[in-house]
Figure 1 (tube, helix red, strand yellow):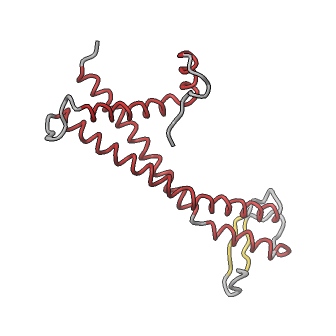
Figure 2 (tube, helix red, strand yellow):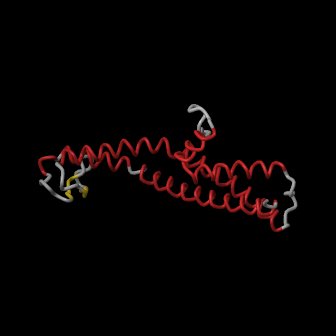
Figure 3 (cartoon, one colour):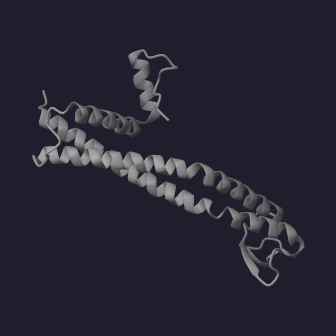
Length: 185
């Protein structure tokens, strides 16, 4: 049987792993948002390719074309030489549409993950202070700290094992298909 100190140490380690996972997720979402900001550039590349389609050589890796909105400026557009210029233009339009969706969807997700990471930082700080005996506010018998720790550890565990293992555990436990592995959104 484990002692309370061992249990708390194990939970604290799980919380730190989950925090590292959230930090990686924040960095990924920031990268997605930076990519989404290029939506106008992708759309302009697609429009330029279609406007100057006859000037694009076959199997070219890149092409320099005048900007349709400013003829004094040239655009260098990277191409996939394995496909036609029309397909390259379609790919740019598809990337532009994806980036425009990202401009709408990424910021709320990013703020939610950042908020969760901040709350987890506060929880880890409280738990660490309790471990080291330096806390004025956290008590060893604090029910809110224990409850928050258990909830975060459960999230970390669910992320660690993934949906497949979660479904397998649910089947073994006899949980119905509708109640399996629901995550709050």
